[in-house]
Length: 173
Image (cartoon, rainbow, N blue to C red; front, top):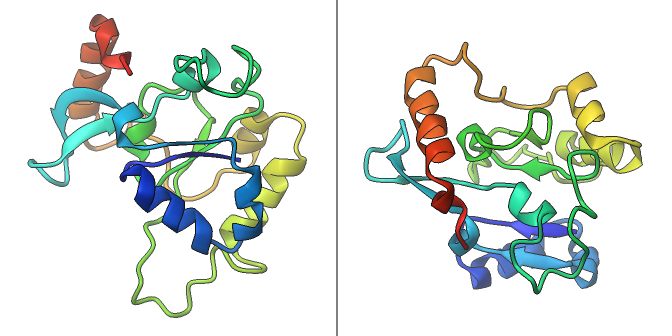
């Protein structure tokens, strides 16, 4: 299991310890925090004070951090899944490598998404047994849609993509 969060490392470990699959914590291969997200110089559409940061899977696949416990390209589009409630964080990733569940709301006492029989948990069970994660996601859409040219804020997001493609240093660790 891999965790790529946007909070600090301590907060991520705390969250992992209380999730329904906490028994798998011993199988956690690594935990990346916000410092490994790519900065863009842009801000989110929802909040002009919040920097728009990206979670680039290629950093994992290309083993940008030499301390990652696997070989370069051991992980790729066929065996990786980003789960995040903010579709913009996957702007630079290949299509069908992420799902975007709705944000967790602590006030929703009926939310069982991660519990036994919950929608996210059931979906992840399907992903885990699939031969190709990217094909599974394509054939079984889940959650919020990815950001594409049909998104109402595409102009903003296309500027982010264009800016990042012209500035390779955005990927720096």
